[in-house]
Amino acid sequence: MMIRKLTASFGKLENETLSFHEGLNVIHAPNESGKSTWCAFIRAMLYGVDSGERARGGYIPDKQRYAPWSGAAMEGEMDLTVDRCNITLTRTTKSKSAPMREFTATYTGSNVRVEGMTGQNAGEQLTGVSRDVFRRSAFIEQGAVAVSGSPDLERRINAIVSTGEEETSFTEADARLRTWLRKRRWNRRGMLPELESKIDDTRRLLEDMDGSAENIKALESRLEQTRADCARLENEVTESRRRQRRESIETLGRGRAALSEASAEHDAAIERLSECRDELRRSPFGVGAPQETEERVSEDLREIAALKAVYQKKISPLLMILFFVLTALGVTLYTTLGSVAYIAAAGVFLIAAIVFLMLYLKAKRGAAQAMSERRAILRRYGVSHGSELYRALEDYRRLWASVRSAEETERVTRDAYEQARRRQAGLEESALADLDFVSGSSPAARLGRELNARRAEAERLSAQIATLKGRLSAMGDTMVLRSELGTMEDERAQLETEYEDISLAAEVLRAADEELQSRFSPELGRVAAEYMSRVTGGRYSQVLINRDFSAMTRTESDAVAHDSNYLSAGTMDLLYLAVRLAVCELALPEGEPCPLIIDDALVNLDETRLQQAMELLRDIAKKRQVILFTCRPV
Image (cartoon, rainbow, N blue to C red; front, side):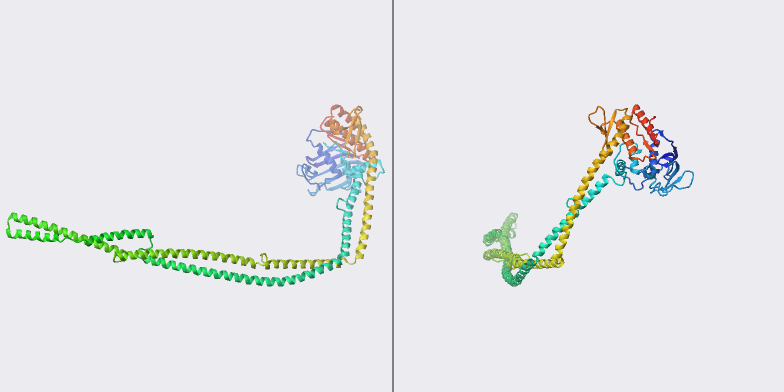
């Protein structure tokens, strides 16, 4: 197979073309010029674009990565020469969700379709291998020189070194055997654990059935006794509750009578206190403090006595005698003698008479005022004499003592009432507790709870008996169960035999794989070692390849082989390039070899090893077309 021409609307390529010839094709172009895009386009033309891929962290599927920048539909053509026939492959896009889905394969220059070639099988028909093997052999992407293992590539290499059968691989067969083993037993799951659980359940069921009749009889006997206890307890509960209600009513009645009596006594004390206070309020002294009242009354009595002494004091008649004498003398002198001297003397006598008159009148007014003030004081207290005031003060003292006595009586009866009220509240609370036949602590409540417990036990026993009878009815005959148990035990023995056989098959398969590995891995290592020796000028002469296609190499002077991670970037690229070329030689069809596509795989090589690698590619190009995209001049 040889690629002759490409025409692409793919990624940054806008209807661009690229032509190739036989042998080694070197496309030298700078970075970002579309070299990797051309490589991806070749793969897409052969195997199509996977429209089912989805973007995920750090990965962009081809249908998005290579969508044409111009916005046009993704499409292209590839002209090939296969078995001396020129073929043109065309892929176009009708729906953006399925890019390059529309496929045609015609003989170049005509409309004649290539029989049997479709968009799904074109790549495998042309290259002889699946997309997976192609990407791990003849298609070397930039930055992905290392080979990774896969079931397809494993089957391919197994076929080369064994019978040629490519239908199975050790990985798939081993996985299938492990699946079978897990299906039969995986920790506590699988067919065997489930069957063993069923066997255990059946055995327990048979054991239950063997003793179920005795259990039912024992339970029925207990149920009968429990029901008898329930009947006895119901009578006791009824009588206890009736007695408790009667006692509570009687206790509350006595408490209410005592409370009513205390209330009546307190009401009488309040009424008596009110009467005493009203009588005291009607007294001449009011409801003032006794000490202050007595002090005030004593002071008023002293003042009354003093006023009495004032108005009872006798006025001397001499003043009036002198008044009349002097008045007579003055009038006589003025009227009889008539001289100036006698007139003046008469004036003196008259003035003296007036003075004595005024003194007499003043004494009379003082006595009258004292009598008036005394009467005012007595009127204030509502008495007419001082002795009455003394008696009123005694009455006041008696009334005040009555008030004090009534207050004390009211306080005592009030305390007695409050005590009776609290006692009644306690009796009511106690009565409520005694009448709480659910959660209370009275004998009736305890009997009620015992009755409920016995009823619950009776219900539980009834349910248990019904369950046992139902199970017996559902289980049927013990002979049937024993027969099923024997069948399950036979099935378990068969599954255990299968498990052992599969385990043995897995061990044999691993042994065969190790044998097969010893057959193909040395051959792959030998071919890779030849290529490695050529590209390194004979420095590295041995290559060891593991099943996962990780590689190690060593020089003639090295005691042990070096893992690829310990090599320089250039040497590691050469190592995996040698492994790739060996895989191509061993795994790809020998008839008409497919092209070798290389995308900048030699970028890390120095000039010497670059030339050695190019010499190797030129030799390989004599057998198959080699297309090398590179940014370095070679």
